[in-house]
Length: 436
Image 1 (cartoon, one colour):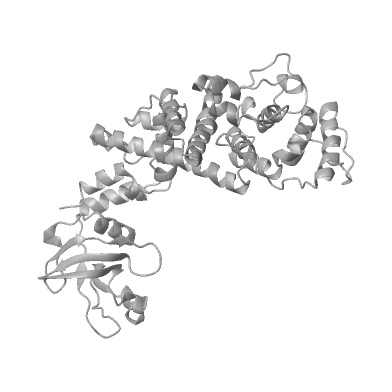
Image 2 (tube, rainbow, N blue to C red):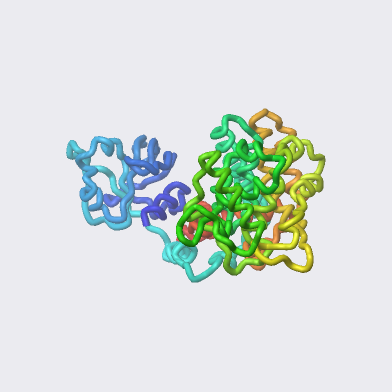
């Protein structure tokens, strides 16, 4: 309830007729102040007019006025600067430490506003509670919000790259390796793939860059996905599985793990169920190994790509040999499979190449590179997933990746977190009903 009160105060969603202190003085907001989410009053440095006097100070809010005493604010010097106490229920007068009475106002919102707030925020049985009213949002407001969301998501990804870059002392290739690993896990296995890359530095892999077998042994061994990395009797001797290649990787991993003092990931969290075979982590790890083998120096190649098509082709490294006809360890299929579809490679460009361009452009003050990244995003086709489909059904179609990225950001950071008060769609739907 207090969160809703903060929202109403911050955006001045009360009618003048409802803004009256309990002793009958008119209140008007000159400046709502700065919302404080830490200890202390809820709004700092507010400016309000109470009666004929203008007050500058802090504003505190409670559901019940008696909470002021229950929280011991009447003995806390941090609350001596409070000039207005806003409550839902006036059940007690309040004072400062010196005994001075603090003006108190009951916040009155329309019943329809409260009902709508509960509908948007409190319903967990509806996938998108605002869907029926989305068409009522003016297209100009919707385009503005979509643009802001797309930039928000892109810069969040760029910030993640910047944090890895700082961790690795400015090593862009190592940073890209971790970013690529996470992206190859897509949404299902992103975290385990990132954990794998973090546990297996690129510098170790480069020492064996001429051997795809060694790189696969390190990756599958670290991931805990080799079917024969330990003997059935608990000894370190690999047990037989009937798969000579898997057994050779297990032997190689045992040697290399000792050489580099590696510790296999514990409970990495791989997800295998209800997944198409081409999306299984085995094949994604094999693809990462193929991209690292030889010479993993593709940062400059991605930055110098003249169009998204070039970057897409860089992501479609072919799988040869053992993994050309397999999705997991075991028997081979009679046919070979496409390493990665064009759609999946496009998603990698969206999640790897474009954030890399933005992060690199910001790091080097290259505005042209950053601008080109957003041009790419607007030129690529929209992603095809359940989130995009949900919003399309609600009247927000995605015709390009710029929009689909915005919708993913909206879903992940606002809808799923019930942050309707922070969403511009929710704000407009609620603000229209705040005043009686």
